[in-house]
Length: 239
Image 1 (cartoon, helix red, strand yellow):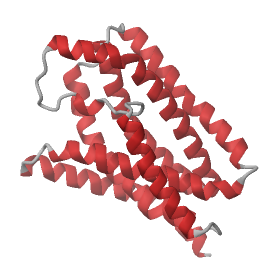
Image 2 (cartoon, rainbow, N blue to C red):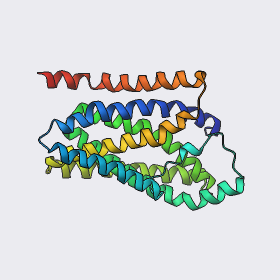
Image 3 (cartoon, rainbow, N blue to C red):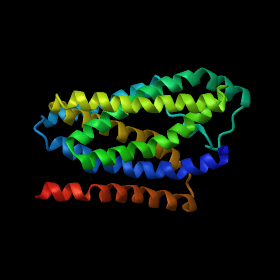
């Protein structure tokens, strides 16, 4: 079983990589794909605004609150305080994570239906973010009193909800293709919100040049990964 120190080392670079992948997927591919459709641009922008506000409110309600940024942040809390807070949050984390994964499945399906290359980068963006999130959730569940086996099993079950969401999204949106641009915009609002309000503030806590250079390089790597994976898609659109 990985130690918490090793998990923290895995999380930190993945956060930076996730920022590059999520922002470039949203701003360079998903949003352009949506706005190239026949959907009304004003309605799409309204969807983007509604999505940003919806994610803000969901986070306020602690339904989709990402716990991983509390781990290894350099803030020292009393053990009893952490355990009480985690105990209250344990089941809420599972409910929120399950809803989040189910929604992610729908978003991946919408992206694949719009453009297979966009589906691939959307899947990569979600995976890049899900790994540090799931690690954080696992640690919170352990603090909440779950055994390692129970925490792993519950996390796995929550992850499988993405498959259910993907199947539902595929068969639903395949019959209602006019909804795909709006789902892509809503997905983009989620990626942008998570990157800007959750992940980037974590990175700002590491302010030294030695810590900043790897962050910038990993963000750039994330952008390059997305550009590489979608290069074939651009070539096809050009013909």
